[in-house]
Image 1 (tube, helix red, strand yellow):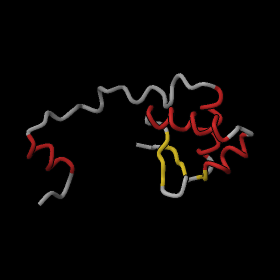
Image 2 (image 1 turned 90 degrees about the horizontal axis):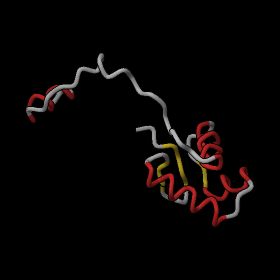
Image 3 (image 1 turned 45 degrees about the vertical axis):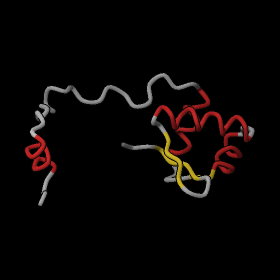
Length: 91
């Protein structure tokens, strides 16, 4: 039975990483277009949001917001939830 992540690392014989040397995370969501940044900012203040509400708040057409969200989903920035809802992918 596994009790900790370290148990799995040991069982799989993976090499543990030294997180103290990693230097931390440089920046989240680098190289975002202005419209993508607006989506991230809006979703950061709401745990999840309907695509229609997101488009309305940002005054984007359904086609534009859909295309942006799909591209952001491919980049791993947002995650689709049931019922046409979206949220930031926090890992």
